[in-house]
Length: 450
Ligand code: HEC
Ligand code: HEC
Ligand code: HEC
Ligand code: HEC
Ligand code: HEC
Ligand code: HEC
Image (cartoon, rainbow, N blue to C red; front, side, top):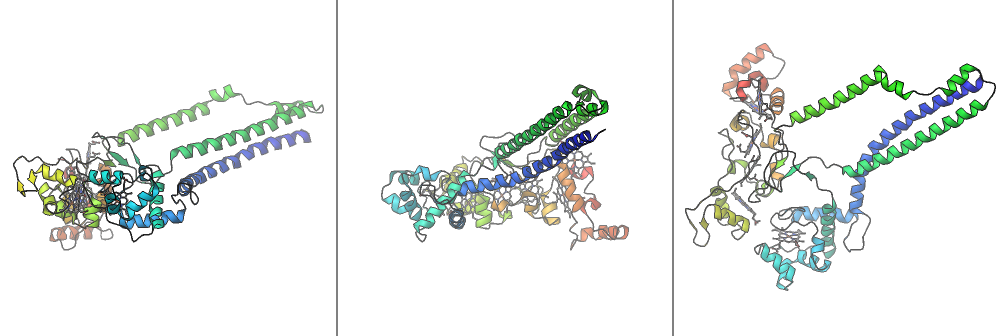
């Protein structure tokens, strides 16, 4: 074989070698793209400076707006949800101009008494609930709040439609993470693929030009020509056993994965967040006003079931608090209470709270065992309820979830005479390991199944 052909081989080899870094670069940029996409949504939201609408959009302004909003407004407002006051998304478009909006936030009563039609209607719609004045803040600071509201509203919703579990409309599934809009990611990946295909085309072109060039040379022997003109026989490859084997394997793997995922999610309602008949906020009651969970969920310490409070418990406070609110009047309606005469009628019908956490009948779960005896926090299983405006199911509530925790969690045996004997027995048998729930029978079928 002469020089020219070994050179040709080197070039072909180099071409394929080039493909490797190209692929590596591709996967690297793809992972970068994720971050970039996340950033780009952030910068898109904040933009730079003022976008001409008069609403500030610089990151600093939005940060200031956010902090004022979180300190003063979240008690009554959320961006996409009615709390005590209206959902604020798009509020900048609802008012005739920005000045009136700023004036309203600064001192809502002044604007309402000034006779602004929109403000008066809104005030009546919200049953004349007073929004406190915020005139301590400058107009600029209030504009920053509006900037924050606008930026926040522009963010893609973090909630998706539910995967399972019927119920009424308007329910949402919270998918936990912030996440990047998948549209961005696909666009970037498609772009990268196009670039990759272009690189490939150029490489193929180089090879074919070289092949032609070498074929024109006269001083080549048969062996060399064979090397130059060898083709990949697609049909042969497609029919070869290894190829069919690999394809079959990939196909089977994907099918098995899909089937398993499907089976595992049967009956799993993680993220279930139904709309409740009264927008009762745990963030307000358990978070801001720090009312103990047990005050309402009276069963947790002593019974299997935690209980949903009856309207009488609400009345301990709401006989006096917020009596004019339409939401509170729903409580009055449920127990047929007349706030004028302060008397109860006998036409009572319970508030129909939509149940969120629900194990199938075949499983037995006891709150007192876990909270009282086991000393577990509600948040371990239910998440940060005291921060939720609307409760959703945080944990999977599958058998695997129960079992995993029983394998990992140490029994709270301190000051519990019931466990003295068991602990003694455990420590003589297995002195190194702490006593886990599984060691006291937490994995026995009959403990959890009737
Ligand atoms: C005590 C509860 C409460 C607090 C705190 C509160 N608001 Fe309000 N807000 C309301 C109510 C209620 C309304 C409906 C109008 C009314 O009743 O005056 C409202 C209306 C609004 C509106 C008009 C909404 C629309 O749909 O046009 C804006 C804007 C607004 N509030 C912004 C704020 C901002 C910004 C803060 C914090 C600085 C804040 N609010 C704090 C209760 C509150
Ligand atoms: C003022 C009364 C009150 C307090 C205090 C309270 N809750 Fe609730 N809780 C309710 C009501 C009413 C519901 C039903 C409506 C709903 O889901 O929001 C509920 C629902 C729940 C649910 C969902 C129940 C279901 O249907 O599966 C959980 C879990 C829960 N609360 C946990 C807690 C925890 C944890 C705390 C303490 C951090 C707490 N609650 C404090 C009244 C209260
Ligand atoms: C320990 C006292 C207490 C109990 C018990 C209580 N609440 Fe409240 N609730 C409050 C306070 C305080 C507020 C905030 C009032 C305000 O914004 O001025 C409030 C606000 C509300 C609001 C918002 C009303 C509005 O339109 O502004 C709703 C709805 C509500 N509670 C429902 C309930 C329900 C349902 C129960 C029973 C499961 C309940 N609360 C039990 C103290 C209580
Ligand atoms: C070990 C996990 C775990 C802990 C800790 C826990 N829960 Fe639960 N909770 C559950 C499960 C599982 C259900 C569903 C029970 C069912 O369907 O039988 C549930 C259901 C509920 C419900 C719905 C009504 C009911 O009783 O079925 C409420 C309310 C509730 N929990 C409140 C609480 C409160 C308040 C605490 C803390 C004092 C708490 N939970 C601690 C796992 C837990
Ligand atoms: C966060 C951890 C955790 C989760 C999740 C959990 N458990 Fe437990 N469980 C415990 C602990 C800790 C104990 C031991 C309590 C004690 O000291 O008796 C326990 C005890 C029990 C017992 C009594 C066992 C015995 O031998 O006395 C049963 C039954 C049980 N759990 C059922 C369940 C079921 C059903 C689920 C799922 C729906 C579940 N648990 C989820 C931590 C957990
Ligand atoms: C720590 C509690 C616990 C123990 C121990 C436990 N299970 Fe379960 N099991 C559950 C819960 C909770 C469910 C319901 C899960 C769901 O709805 O996804 C369940 C569901 C099931 C189901 C129905 C499956 C389905 O998807 O509906 C079967 C069958 C089952 N368990 C069998 C067993 C057997 C057999 C054992 C003993 C080897 C056992 N379990 C031990 C808690 C437990």
